[in-house]
Amino acid sequence: MPPEGITRFAPSPTGYLHLGHAFSALTAWGRPGTCLLRIEDIDRPRCRPEHEAAILEDLRWLGLCWPEPVWRQSDRLSHYTAALERLMALGMCYPCRCTRAEIRAALSAPQEGATTPPYPGTCRGRSMADATPGDAVRLDLRRALALAGPVAFTETGPLHPGRHTPDPGKMALDFGDVVLARRDIGTSYHIAVVVDDAAQRVTEVVRGVDLFDVTPLHRLLQRLLDLPEPVWHHHALIRDGAGRRLAKRDDARAIRRFRADGATPADVAAMVGLSLRG
Image (cartoon, rainbow, N blue to C red):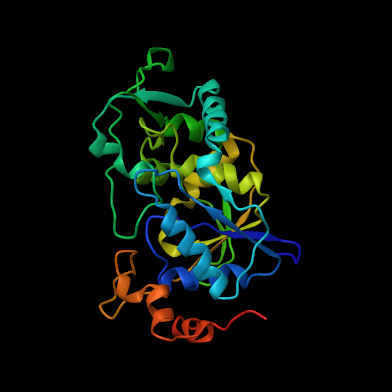
Protein backbone atom coordinates (compact mmCIF):
# COMPACT_ATOMS: atom_id res chain seq x y z
CA MET A 1 0.00 0.00 0.00
CA PRO A 2 1.43 3.44 -0.86
CA PRO A 3 2.24 5.91 1.95
CA GLU A 4 -0.95 7.86 1.21
CA GLY A 5 -3.10 4.74 1.62
CA ILE A 6 -6.17 4.48 3.84
CA THR A 7 -7.28 1.57 5.96
CA ARG A 8 -9.82 1.23 8.77
CA PHE A 9 -10.70 -0.50 12.01
CA ALA A 10 -14.44 -1.18 12.16
CA PRO A 11 -15.66 -2.76 15.42
CA SER A 12 -19.26 -3.43 16.35
CA PRO A 13 -20.35 -2.05 19.76
CA THR A 14 -21.92 -5.30 20.92
CA GLY A 15 -19.37 -5.93 23.67
CA TYR A 16 -16.04 -4.83 25.06
CA LEU A 17 -12.82 -4.97 23.07
CA HIS A 18 -10.55 -7.93 23.84
CA LEU A 19 -7.02 -8.93 22.91
CA GLY A 20 -8.10 -10.03 19.44
CA HIS A 21 -9.46 -6.55 18.77
CA ALA A 22 -6.25 -5.01 20.08
CA PHE A 23 -4.27 -7.13 17.62
CA SER A 24 -6.53 -6.11 14.73
CA ALA A 25 -6.50 -2.44 15.68
CA LEU A 26 -2.74 -2.30 16.12
CA THR A 27 -2.27 -4.16 12.83
CA ALA A 28 -4.49 -1.65 11.03
CA TRP A 29 -2.81 1.38 12.61
CA GLY A 30 0.58 -0.14 11.85
CA ARG A 31 -0.02 -0.13 8.09
CA PRO A 32 1.36 2.81 6.08
CA GLY A 33 -0.93 5.79 5.65
CA THR A 34 -4.08 6.78 7.53
CA CYS A 35 -6.26 4.51 9.65
CA LEU A 36 -9.93 5.41 10.06
CA LEU A 37 -12.25 4.31 12.84
CA ARG A 38 -15.75 3.21 11.80
CA ILE A 39 -18.48 1.92 14.12
CA GLU A 40 -20.50 -0.91 12.55
CA ASP A 41 -23.74 -0.56 14.49
CA ILE A 42 -26.52 -1.60 12.13
CA ASP A 43 -27.48 -4.43 14.51
CA ARG A 44 -29.34 -1.97 16.73
CA PRO A 45 -30.86 -4.50 19.17
CA ARG A 46 -27.38 -5.75 20.14
CA CYS A 47 -25.41 -2.50 20.00
CA ARG A 48 -25.01 -0.48 23.19
CA PRO A 49 -23.85 3.15 23.71
CA GLU A 50 -21.74 2.06 26.68
CA HIS A 51 -19.89 -0.42 24.51
CA GLU A 52 -19.16 2.24 21.90
CA ALA A 53 -17.87 4.57 24.59
CA ALA A 54 -15.65 1.81 25.96
CA ILE A 55 -14.29 1.06 22.47
CA LEU A 56 -13.24 4.68 22.02
CA GLU A 57 -11.72 4.81 25.51
CA ASP A 58 -9.74 1.57 25.04
CA LEU A 59 -8.40 2.62 21.65
CA ARG A 60 -7.29 5.99 22.98
CA TRP A 61 -5.66 4.23 25.94
CA LEU A 62 -3.69 2.13 23.43
CA GLY A 63 -2.39 5.42 22.03
CA LEU A 64 -4.39 5.25 18.79
CA CYS A 65 -5.98 8.26 17.13
CA TRP A 66 -8.12 8.76 14.05
CA PRO A 67 -9.65 11.50 11.90
CA GLU A 68 -12.96 12.90 13.06
CA PRO A 69 -15.85 12.54 12.68
CA VAL A 70 -16.16 8.80 13.27
CA TRP A 71 -18.58 7.21 10.81
CA ARG A 72 -21.43 5.12 12.20
CA GLN A 73 -23.34 2.77 9.94
CA SER A 74 -26.61 3.65 11.67
CA ASP A 75 -26.23 7.14 10.18
CA ARG A 76 -25.79 5.81 6.64
CA LEU A 77 -28.78 3.57 6.00
CA SER A 78 -29.94 5.70 3.05
CA HIS A 79 -26.63 4.99 1.27
CA TYR A 80 -27.12 1.25 1.66
CA THR A 81 -30.67 1.56 0.37
CA ALA A 82 -29.40 3.40 -2.70
CA ALA A 83 -26.88 0.64 -3.41
CA LEU A 84 -29.55 -2.01 -3.00
CA GLU A 85 -31.86 -0.14 -5.37
CA ARG A 86 -29.09 -0.04 -7.96
CA LEU A 87 -28.70 -3.81 -7.75
CA MET A 88 -32.46 -4.18 -8.06
CA ALA A 89 -32.44 -2.03 -11.19
CA LEU A 90 -29.85 -4.39 -12.66
CA GLY A 91 -32.20 -7.32 -12.04
CA MET A 92 -29.83 -8.86 -9.51
CA CYS A 93 -32.27 -9.21 -6.60
CA TYR A 94 -35.45 -10.96 -5.58
CA PRO A 95 -37.65 -10.88 -2.47
CA CYS A 96 -37.53 -13.78 -0.04
CA ARG A 97 -40.16 -14.74 2.51
CA CYS A 98 -38.27 -17.74 3.94
CA THR A 99 -37.79 -18.19 7.67
CA ARG A 100 -35.68 -15.96 9.86
CA ALA A 101 -33.47 -18.90 10.79
CA GLU A 102 -32.27 -19.07 7.19
CA ILE A 103 -31.26 -15.42 7.06
CA ARG A 104 -30.13 -14.70 10.62
CA ALA A 105 -26.44 -14.55 9.61
CA ALA A 106 -26.96 -11.81 7.03
CA LEU A 107 -26.51 -8.80 9.31
CA SER A 108 -23.18 -9.47 10.98
CA ALA A 109 -19.79 -10.35 9.62
CA PRO A 110 -19.42 -14.13 9.24
CA GLN A 111 -17.84 -15.80 12.25
CA GLU A 112 -15.14 -18.44 12.19
CA GLY A 113 -16.61 -21.93 12.31
CA ALA A 114 -20.10 -20.75 11.39
CA THR A 115 -21.56 -22.48 8.36
CA THR A 116 -24.78 -21.59 6.59
CA PRO A 117 -25.99 -23.91 3.82
CA PRO A 118 -26.36 -22.17 0.46
CA TYR A 119 -29.89 -20.95 -0.08
CA PRO A 120 -31.80 -23.46 -2.26
CA GLY A 121 -33.50 -20.75 -4.33
CA THR A 122 -37.04 -21.26 -3.05
CA CYS A 123 -38.06 -17.66 -3.84
CA ARG A 124 -35.78 -17.09 -6.83
CA GLY A 125 -38.66 -16.88 -9.28
CA ARG A 126 -40.30 -13.97 -7.46
CA SER A 127 -40.12 -10.43 -8.84
CA MET A 128 -39.23 -7.38 -6.77
CA ALA A 129 -42.56 -5.98 -7.97
CA ASP A 130 -44.20 -8.61 -5.75
CA ALA A 131 -42.16 -7.75 -2.66
CA THR A 132 -43.96 -7.25 0.63
CA PRO A 133 -42.74 -5.36 3.75
CA GLY A 134 -41.97 -8.66 5.46
CA ASP A 135 -39.55 -9.85 2.78
CA ALA A 136 -35.78 -10.03 2.84
CA VAL A 137 -33.88 -9.28 -0.37
CA ARG A 138 -31.49 -11.81 -1.85
CA LEU A 139 -28.80 -11.57 -4.52
CA ASP A 140 -29.33 -13.85 -7.52
CA LEU A 141 -25.72 -15.00 -7.42
CA ARG A 142 -25.58 -16.85 -10.73
CA ARG A 143 -27.08 -13.88 -12.57
CA ALA A 144 -24.69 -11.54 -10.76
CA LEU A 145 -21.67 -13.64 -11.71
CA ALA A 146 -22.81 -13.76 -15.32
CA LEU A 147 -23.06 -9.97 -15.46
CA ALA A 148 -19.87 -9.19 -13.54
CA GLY A 149 -17.63 -11.77 -15.14
CA PRO A 150 -14.59 -13.18 -13.31
CA VAL A 151 -13.81 -11.48 -10.01
CA ALA A 152 -10.33 -11.24 -8.60
CA PHE A 153 -8.73 -9.63 -5.57
CA THR A 154 -5.25 -8.94 -4.23
CA GLU A 155 -4.21 -10.10 -0.76
CA THR A 156 -1.31 -8.34 0.99
CA GLY A 157 -1.44 -10.32 4.23
CA PRO A 158 1.13 -12.99 5.08
CA LEU A 159 -1.33 -15.89 5.18
CA HIS A 160 -2.67 -15.86 1.58
CA PRO A 161 -0.52 -13.38 -0.35
CA GLY A 162 -1.00 -12.69 -4.05
CA ARG A 163 -3.73 -12.31 -6.63
CA HIS A 164 -6.75 -14.59 -6.25
CA THR A 165 -9.33 -15.40 -8.95
CA PRO A 166 -12.14 -17.45 -7.34
CA ASP A 167 -13.96 -20.03 -9.39
CA PRO A 168 -17.57 -18.90 -10.11
CA GLY A 169 -18.92 -22.39 -9.59
CA LYS A 170 -17.30 -22.62 -6.20
CA MET A 171 -18.65 -19.19 -5.29
CA ALA A 172 -22.17 -20.37 -6.13
CA LEU A 173 -21.71 -23.38 -3.86
CA ASP A 174 -20.06 -21.42 -1.06
CA PHE A 175 -22.43 -18.46 -0.89
CA GLY A 176 -25.69 -19.32 -2.62
CA ASP A 177 -28.10 -16.40 -2.98
CA VAL A 178 -26.94 -14.35 0.00
CA VAL A 179 -29.21 -11.91 1.82
CA LEU A 180 -28.44 -8.30 0.93
CA ALA A 181 -31.18 -6.75 3.06
CA ARG A 182 -32.55 -8.29 6.21
CA ARG A 183 -36.27 -7.76 6.55
CA ASP A 184 -36.13 -5.79 9.80
CA ILE A 185 -33.41 -3.24 8.92
CA GLY A 186 -33.21 -3.18 5.13
CA THR A 187 -29.50 -3.87 4.77
CA SER A 188 -26.73 -6.34 5.65
CA TYR A 189 -23.08 -6.45 6.56
CA HIS A 190 -22.12 -7.24 2.95
CA ILE A 191 -23.76 -4.15 1.46
CA ALA A 192 -22.73 -1.81 4.26
CA VAL A 193 -19.06 -2.76 4.29
CA VAL A 194 -18.44 -2.38 0.55
CA VAL A 195 -20.39 0.88 0.34
CA ASP A 196 -18.57 2.41 3.32
CA ASP A 197 -15.11 1.26 2.24
CA ALA A 198 -15.65 2.92 -1.14
CA ALA A 199 -17.13 6.10 0.36
CA GLN A 200 -14.19 6.45 2.75
CA ARG A 201 -11.70 5.76 -0.06
CA VAL A 202 -10.22 2.79 1.76
CA THR A 203 -7.31 1.39 -0.23
CA GLU A 204 -6.44 -1.56 2.04
CA VAL A 205 -9.03 -3.54 4.00
CA VAL A 206 -7.41 -4.90 7.17
CA ARG A 207 -9.43 -7.57 8.98
CA GLY A 208 -9.23 -11.09 10.44
CA VAL A 209 -8.54 -14.14 8.32
CA ASP A 210 -11.98 -15.48 9.28
CA LEU A 211 -13.30 -13.04 6.64
CA PHE A 212 -10.94 -14.12 3.89
CA ASP A 213 -13.45 -16.56 2.38
CA VAL A 214 -16.15 -13.89 2.02
CA THR A 215 -13.87 -11.55 0.08
CA PRO A 216 -14.95 -12.89 -3.35
CA LEU A 217 -18.53 -11.89 -2.54
CA HIS A 218 -17.45 -8.39 -1.54
CA ARG A 219 -15.40 -8.08 -4.71
CA LEU A 220 -18.44 -9.18 -6.74
CA LEU A 221 -20.61 -6.50 -5.13
CA GLN A 222 -17.94 -3.90 -5.84
CA ARG A 223 -17.96 -4.82 -9.52
CA LEU A 224 -21.75 -4.72 -9.74
CA LEU A 225 -21.84 -1.31 -8.02
CA ASP A 226 -18.85 0.10 -9.95
CA LEU A 227 -16.94 0.63 -6.71
CA PRO A 228 -13.14 0.88 -6.64
CA GLU A 229 -11.09 -2.19 -5.83
CA PRO A 230 -9.00 -2.03 -2.65
CA VAL A 231 -6.47 -4.62 -1.62
CA TRP A 232 -7.07 -6.84 1.41
CA HIS A 233 -4.85 -7.69 4.35
CA HIS A 234 -6.25 -10.59 6.38
CA HIS A 235 -4.36 -11.16 9.61
CA ALA A 236 -4.18 -14.15 11.92
CA LEU A 237 -6.59 -14.50 14.83
CA ILE A 238 -5.69 -14.34 18.50
CA ARG A 239 -6.78 -17.54 20.23
CA ASP A 240 -7.11 -18.79 23.78
CA GLY A 241 -5.20 -21.71 25.28
CA ALA A 242 -7.65 -24.18 23.74
CA GLY A 243 -7.19 -22.75 20.27
CA ARG A 244 -10.55 -20.98 20.20
CA ARG A 245 -10.96 -17.56 18.66
CA LEU A 246 -11.49 -14.88 21.30
CA ALA A 247 -15.07 -13.58 21.56
CA LYS A 248 -16.59 -10.50 23.17
CA ARG A 249 -18.29 -12.65 25.78
CA ASP A 250 -14.84 -13.63 27.10
CA ASP A 251 -14.52 -10.76 29.55
CA ALA A 252 -11.41 -12.29 31.12
CA ARG A 253 -9.47 -11.12 28.06
CA ALA A 254 -11.17 -7.75 27.69
CA ILE A 255 -8.77 -4.83 27.35
CA ARG A 256 -10.59 -3.02 30.15
CA ARG A 257 -9.83 -5.96 32.49
CA PHE A 258 -6.11 -5.78 31.72
CA ARG A 259 -6.22 -2.02 32.27
CA ALA A 260 -7.87 -2.51 35.66
CA ASP A 261 -5.17 -5.02 36.59
CA GLY A 262 -2.46 -2.43 35.92
CA ALA A 263 -1.30 -3.42 32.43
CA THR A 264 0.18 -0.75 30.19
CA PRO A 265 -0.55 -0.29 26.47
CA ALA A 266 2.89 -1.75 25.75
CA ASP A 267 1.98 -4.80 27.86
CA VAL A 268 -1.19 -5.40 25.81
CA ALA A 269 0.70 -4.94 22.56
CA ALA A 270 3.30 -7.44 23.73
CA MET A 271 0.58 -9.95 24.63
CA VAL A 272 -0.51 -10.05 20.99
CA GLY A 273 3.03 -10.07 19.64
CA LEU A 274 3.14 -6.49 18.35
CA SER A 275 4.92 -3.27 19.17
CA LEU A 276 3.21 0.06 19.56
CA ARG A 277 3.52 2.24 16.47
CA GLY A 278 5.80 5.23 16.79
